[in-house]
Image (cartoon, rainbow, N blue to C red; front, side):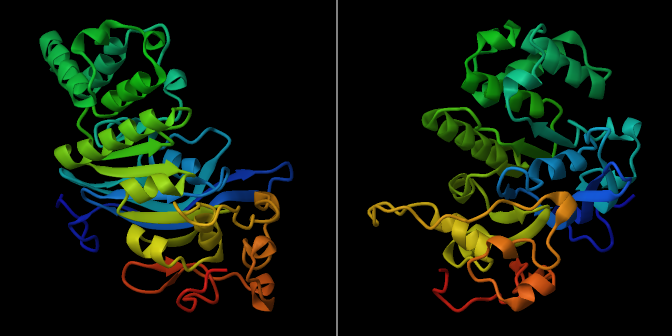
Length: 340
């Protein structure tokens, strides 16, 4: 098998096409909580997924790894991983087949390390278990050397690998989770809110660690967060999600300099400028829609400060604005400087 799909550029590592995740309500009707999500992640790139809680960011990530809870399923979507040893059609893999993908090709740093790590196992045993699963021929000394190397990557003394999760601080536990995610040398790492519940100084250290590892190890990174300031410092490109859809996607530079979707405009306006006016930005009124009762037209229309008649009647498509930019708005691109 060739190292890349005929229609997939060699510099693209992950290609997600029309991904949907749904559940059945009490009447047996399909309710989509992720709907028609498409994006690509390039080799060595940091790609951000941002939006309010409940917009579908984490569900999208779990679908990529085949870790959806039993109540959810994937009605549509292709997930293609252009791995070094050949193309992997993740969407066609069985659970047994996914065991060969998770951690060996794609790994995840989960939100809340204390909940993700087994509290009654030494962290060395947890990391070693993942290594032995994917490298059955490795001996004990080889596992110990790998763990020491991993702890060196994340800035923890190798001797501490024999400790239990509760013996580490919150920031150190998150570093252990990153070491676990790197245990089997994946090409793509997904960070799901990796700085949640950490203080500002520790958040900065964890983000810098991820950036250093991405550069030094040649990793690709998907970073999931609701904090746009985090993405500005870490990512090359960003997708803004709203109500299960991608509202806007583009490079960090373009998206932050001139947001084209009204939702992105309001999100960015919520961050005060250093030295700017000491006043609160206008709030986004209302609440995100119920997935089981989405608006007929644009899903953001009931909360939009720029809504017009067509918005309530017709759902906009995610429309390309240039080679790197797309927005789900009838009126994008907006005039230069028009963000109110």
